[in-house]
Image (tube, rainbow, N blue to C red; front, side, top):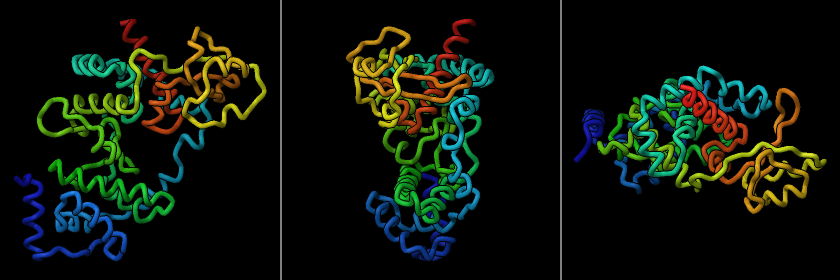
Length: 328
């Protein structure tokens, strides 16, 4: 049975013409035909998709914003101050209390700590308060068709958005998100929504936009599907007395054991299994370089956002939330 949103759109289409044609801002783009072919193959009604794409609007502010992400311009000592604030930690405690039952249930079933789930939502949207003001269809169309550097990626996300909107029955023009098209409490891209979103409360829709319970379960599922190891270490502070810069240029994925890194001059502050694999991290702190051994669970956090500074911010915020909660 068609959803009310589908029925409404199709009634509008029928008033316009028996077959909807391109008439919007992107109507002359040859790429639209491939987008349509891809989504129709996945079961989306062609006229529905055309009518929606006709309403997509190019947003110059989106193109401006995506050219200057904070993590590419700020050193760690400035970057961390964005997310590691007393207010964000205190609000994290409040969020955890409000959704204590759901967090406990989800954490118990997945092994992902309640504080880590909470911190992700805190970093992404300040616990659902700042989820983005751009229409998702505008953001993804703008970046798919007017940002050549990453056009293939955003074209795929545009297609996924059309599919999820059609399948979920959500009003696609009402769905808003970030300038990159990320949505809801946890800022899922459309492909992530389709792959990892969870209908925790069983109402038939994985509502990451307005249902914190679904959002909590979806974030945890994302971590599980990317290999989170329950109870395992995440990141360990370390000293480093070596002289090699090449150690810090190997990417985010752990490839060396803690023992091998010890031979290169790394000494973790706490006892760490020498057989565990880790990535050495060096960041510019307030008082000089900070050194960390980033283990496999840290790498899982970077799958949410491919930035070591992001992952460390999430982890440190999670620890601050735990500490404040324990203090009462």
